[in-house]
Length: 193
Image: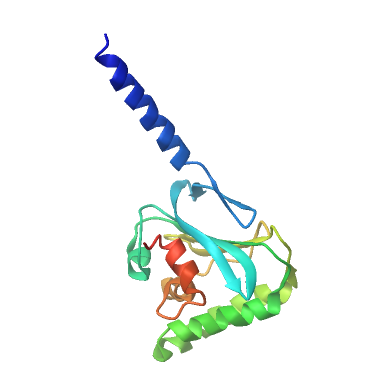
């Protein structure tokens, strides 16, 4: 009987520590869930961090079906993917839209940019229609294979999905490409050590 007591204690400790690891985290006052469900598929938090532009702007979190550490791994990972930005301060949408466009330009080969122009213009319409973001507002980018990129702004899906995988890759390059807007955020979301 005494032989089983240490095993039982170790098993309970393991369950408790696993539960603690699965608990949501909090960054800059934003609760980041450890899972997200996209199109019926449960995704795991790959990593999360804070986007700084002189001050804290938003908390970014990446959800995938398996751990990824590079843009190529992210694009090759099976199933849906989610990138969520939850704002921690008031932010006008116009400068943010310009940063998105600049992020694509900085990370996509010039020869491929012309094919993306219609989608970049559509993306710009989102920022034109949404004047500003308040703390707690979010933008969610969900990639659903066979459907495309679904953009949800302040809880509401925006228009039809962007069906081009190249546009999804370009959007992800803003955060995970060779010239990300914030290296620390890139490393945090890719869980880089």
